[in-house]
Image (cartoon, rainbow, N blue to C red):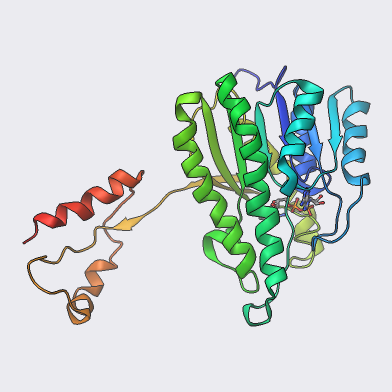
Length: 300
Ligand code: NAI
């Protein structure tokens, strides 16, 4: 088995001052990467800022003989983070969009600020960093982009309407980057991790959190970010040493004759067929998904 290495690779990890991002940054550095350790250093709710979080991780990397630079900008100023990578290391090979905050509250109590802050950090932030890095990766015909989604986005979670919105948005974003990046050797993949961190500290008992080490998640990030990994557009759930891949599962559906008016009553009548997953398909692209729908135009 050949060793996964990142010698001469420049990696940006956002939100790398704590939790998962810190674990990713250390893992990349251990395998030879030059790492931009970005962290705004605010609270889990997105308040305040400090240089301590990023600097502490950089000190740790340097102490083990690795190469890293600290960056304290918010991901919403993604161009500054990318500039930091260029100024210090001259290029960008890997972007790990990891920075995140929570503003959990049930939907009826959610404020515009709760919604906007979560959107800004997770979605706009990932956009700003990736968008600034994109032309450099295209020029070099090489790039690996990783997004960080969440089970809350895939399945929903009480009190996390804003967070669920943001987290699944990233997978949609990633799937299109995968298409646009293909001919430039840029891949884009998404993880939905579970790990003990300050974000999960309030929702799980400490003895479980202790076992859910971020170090169980980082190896998948490294695999997805490695040169040898050319699969793109994936979504993976990962944690506790377990890794699985997700894909769409669509029922075979039912095509109604298009020559007659379609009524809700007809849909009612065929509901058990429309929703029957005993036989299903797994469309892997927009074209594949559309094909079956368009075929029904012959159903007169
Ligand atoms: P964490 O709170 O330990 O780390 C997140 C880091 O992002 C913090 O150091 C914070 O300062 C930084 N950050 C926040 N806003 C920032 C901004 N605007 N610019 C730059 N840095 C910023 O949390 P954790 O758990 O390590 O989360 C990492 C990512 O994983 C997040 O995107 C989170 O949504 C996601 N995630 C985590 C799960 C878990 O089980 N821990 C579950 C699902 C998703």
